[in-house]
Length: 239
Image (tube, rainbow, N blue to C red; front, side, top):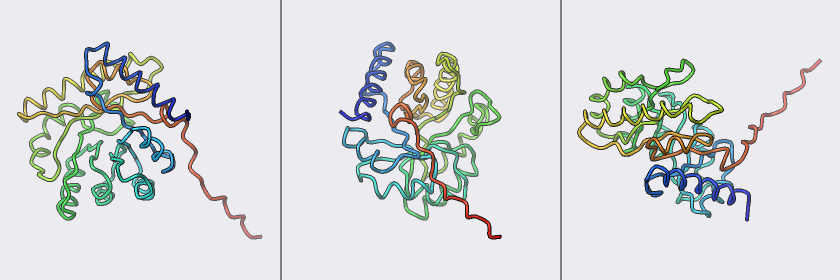
């Protein structure tokens, strides 16, 4: 059995245990493999092992990797997206997580109209209010909901957040709980369900599931340490 196969089994066991503790069906939580800095061969092996959903956070890397990966793989963009990369995001991904402004959403809408596509979006919420992270504040998202829901090419499917890193996963519990509560508020205002709560990563996925996550994003615990991107050697200066 390969190292990837062993890690995938371990992660699925962690998900199953967290679902059991919280009285949830394992089928209610989807696992995403965060494949950034890993080659198409790693994606292909993961697909052979039954994983179908993958996340990338760099457009340039995704543009090179996705065509070399199995056609059955599904792709979400999970990083901070600049508006000038919206065209590629719409072309490459079925869902854009991390939509954090109306400006970006409107550019995605424009590109989706041009390409006759309809990618789903998740609104990124900076629940902890970290200055180093992107995302709506909860109040700002509630205020933007009417404008977001009016974008007919971008079905809003849910919310996502990135919890502050902490050695103790329990530290993230209030963050995940607040996102779930905010999702419920959004559903009440919109009068339709937002089925995706994308929260929890390698170190805190159990807590996220216990607080309602429907999608967990796992990179290192699945694919191992990320290789450093290869950079060309500097050219020696001429005398």
